[in-house]
Image (cartoon, rainbow, N blue to C red; front, side, top):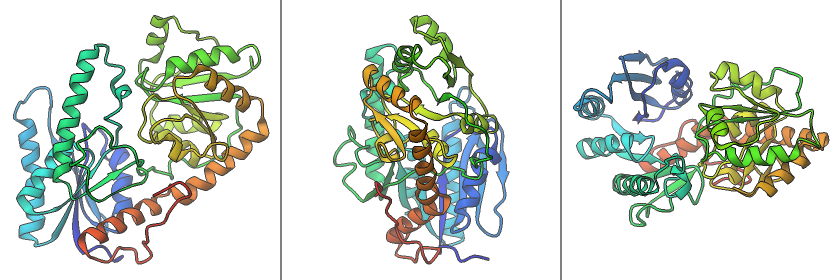
Length: 395
């Protein structure tokens, strides 16, 4: 059995989770190479993935958010009971990781208060951005929700011992006192085994994956795309995401040469992503953009707006192209350059694959978290070579 850290790792992930194996199986196996512990989440029925070789197990507790007003409390009590078991019965040093400073972060704070666990809180959205909630139609409601999230998030982050983010400027908007503590930034884990190249022939097609409509900048993309149609009539734009076509039709946006695919499961999305000439993410607000890393693992060049974390995961004119957010002219220029230059597409795709293989791998993710836990607990970081590597644009 591999040497693992001498502490117990308890992770709380958001739900509801319907399929444990597809959503958390790879995550548990990856962390289980270096750590022992468990991942807790919730859904409409109980579930369990046992730990293999003493690594990480997954537990799903029942929490029907819409029916039982006591479900949140019951779920929190179940997670706290697991933490108590590890800390006070098994007498293990406990490290608690919450996925965000809201739902799971509140659970993490309770675990810290009741067990003395070391509390690491992740932040996976750009909650201080005005455009983060732009798809909420009512401006007053947007402001109320944003203010509430920042208040709750600041409260939780005050309880944390360490903060993990996706890019350096991500915490703007939170109370400065709450975020004045140790933190680092690096990517979220991607199942690179799922996004492996199979040698598909590349088509003259650009792929978008995501929603909601305005936050992801679909309106800007459709306007810029329409301007390129005369020069590149053989190219196609595919939009993968929930409810995109009805909104485009309601707004009267141009859709010639656009294929609205609808949401796709990962096993159907992978071949579509590999067959595309490139992936585009024209977001107004974005923490990282998982699809950017997924496309990179497939050797696909990425086009992204210069906003949030995107410039930290696309190096302009090296492994992708950047354009200004909400700027139709800037996006049009990038599209024309990309579609008109096959050598550029080849160069960007090769560089994206090389960078993903080196800096966005599962091993790199484990090494970075191992270094964090080693600093927090004063214990050796497994595996032994787990030094905090630095990417060309990384932390």
